[in-house]
Image (cartoon, rainbow, N blue to C red; front, side, top):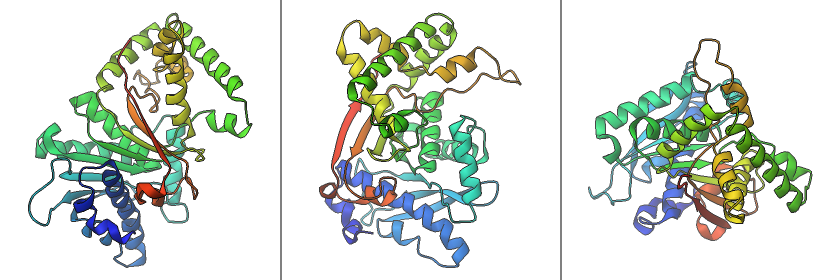
Length: 339
């Protein structure tokens, strides 16, 4: 950990750099916390105590593995900066060479097929955050969510749930969030920009046509969902070379290109951005127990996308607690204004 981070509250209290670094450090603390339990050591506390946090609860899954933690900010002088959080709920990602690796990979597969919502980790995360919000006053609480990789999936799920059910947009920091799409394949094939753009235009037009014909019920529901979620603007931190989250880059950039390209394509993009072929296919059939199928988690009305182009391991969490001077960050905010 960068030694300067111990004073980061003093130097960067009101900056996006500061918020990013703090969130990334606490997420890393949850990784190390799980390692500490099996190696009989105590290295994790340095990642939050040096930043004036204390952990008040750990989140364990059905196999008793630690997948997250709730941290409380305890300012040394008793005064909390207005933009500083009271609590941060942090979720770790996959630990491959570890006892929890099999469970982590199983959840990754569940996420890929959109069957993750009712698994133990996601359910417990929603419950714990709900209890925390009830205890501290709902939206006025200063509660942040943060996660890396698989943990970003959990934080995204919790943030969507809170916004949809409570109308509360929690500050949410998603580091290398996975996105299941064909974008990495297209990028790997080296498809020309024009061919790629034409492919997306064709895809958007097909979604719009289907949404207004066989998928009208789903389209109506998604329009209502986007209206509820639109005020929530999660922070998405992605690396352009990370194939795991490249889909988010294409999702936001291609839809924005469609919105800005012409008046003819704009209505198409406004419909297609909230639809997926998978959801339209499944919406035509009820699930076995009669429950409505879940929509794809990447369908977000609003977000701020921070694209990193620096050198180094593109999926690593350690890049995100580095200062701005070491990263080639290009942020862009995407806001949904409705049809």
